[in-house]
Amino acid sequence: MQKRAIHLTPEERKQLIEFVSTGYHQANETKRAYMLLHSDSGFTDETIARMLFCSEDSVRRTRIRYLTEGLEAALVDQPRPGRGLALNAQQEAYLIALACSDPPAGQERWTLELLAQCLVDDEQVEAISPETVRLTLKKTNSSLGW
Image (cartoon, rainbow, N blue to C red; front, side, top):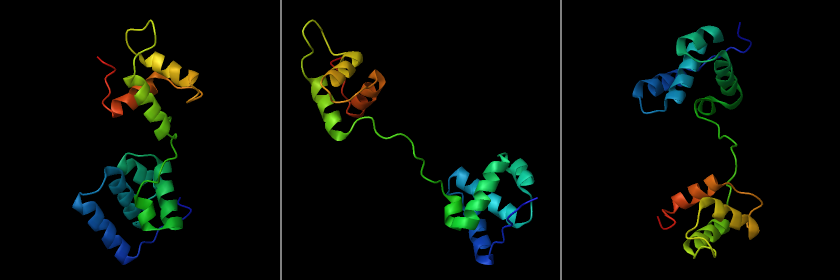
């Protein structure tokens, strides 16, 4: 049994029907529009979840977002917090300059591990993985001389 029923206005219902009919939207946005349309038609969260091959929790969250934040907020993805950037612009520039310089004595060329260790030794970062170094250099099309 639904605790908070959705009652779409005729304009909102028309807007959602046009939304799902055009095909210009992301699949998850279209699925949320169907959730709202079916919820307005009186279907339970469990039934909607089975019809749309998603979880009841997804249906519940979409319905609650519609009721608290409105139609537009219910359709689009919320920004995800994610992890911040590993290197700022100055640190990236330092890494690129380091990779373009001559390798240390006894080394034929720079390795990702060596670059990561130099960034830590030069107190640019507290810790960094070779994979982060690789991804940063990949953005700049740096090849380390290979």
